[in-house]
Length: 319
Image (cartoon, rainbow, N blue to C red):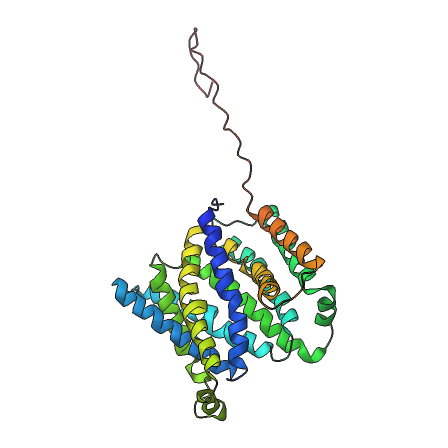
């Protein structure tokens, strides 16, 4: 497994900040707009920003069929489908239950990567590390959330929808690693554009929700703009660059760190009081990260025994 440099951790934390803050911007936006419209506008803004960046950098998109196969597949599996599934599922279940379901994404990524990525084999150490991280999230959300997950048959489809979204994200992470060699900005632009185009039929064209969106307050449109520029465009470039550098398994840990980021934001900016379980959860998550990515001790290769010249007549191997 490739050694993780400090720059990789910095990029991962930047992604945590951009995608973790997206929950706040989304909450502000969906209070005034339909969820499908928020997601569609976010992807359209992100695609426009990335296409402008490509023009300024004088870079292009991959033009082969193989490139576009991956662009379309990642745009579908990593953007359009999970966005719709998770948005639909969260109409019936609370964020705590959705958070637990989403944290299985790294575990699915481990399995997919084991079979599809030769440089990311499954190991007992990595499994233990990711299970420690999952335990930390359960501690953070509280044991009562697990009880809630087992109750209420009416929410079964909603839970399955969020779980399917997590599986989509895991598959997209592995596909991003398998894609043909390409510029990270170009890949981000193409996949975001594909996601926006695929979501166009789902937008509430000509409906009351669409009309109400144009009368939404300024802070709602500002939230959509922040989602498009930071949580979609810039985050996508960092994401694909990080996938290239360290692989899908490392990047999948975002789903462990984002809930912790939300807790920190609440403590620093919303006046929420830290609790003991926050510290325990943080410790478990970081222990999991350490175990999963600790380098195995290297053994010094044995030197071959010196060949001693025979003084007598030599004999062939077959004799």
